[in-house]
Length: 165
Image (cartoon, rainbow, N blue to C red; front, side):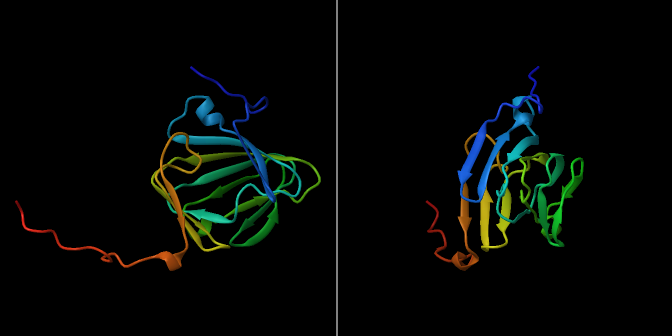
């Protein structure tokens, strides 16, 4: 049996881009989970974890451990308190973004289903992500991002098969 510790995390992913800087410990995988995601995020002041998005297949549950991160949802912005638990269902109602507008580091725990393939929509830019594996999953698997204007008709470029041999 493998174990992980949320109070002494082994961070295994860092993102460092302006406005989107965080550290993540995928404690679910570190403990040996395959179909349930569990990640601890550490978010510095003034940073967001991800763009505003929604999942078509996966559901997530956020638990604030420290700090006062702000949640953006279809209902608008709301500051979260330590200990609050918020569910993000698959679909339009589950759209979300976490931003640390406070002065101190915020830490939160995210549990998620690991359903693949997955479609993710980025609502501010109109991008759509087609992911062969669950978001944040280890290992290989294709992921492509598109704008709806790139869409083509289902039959575009298709030709009937030739005669059977």
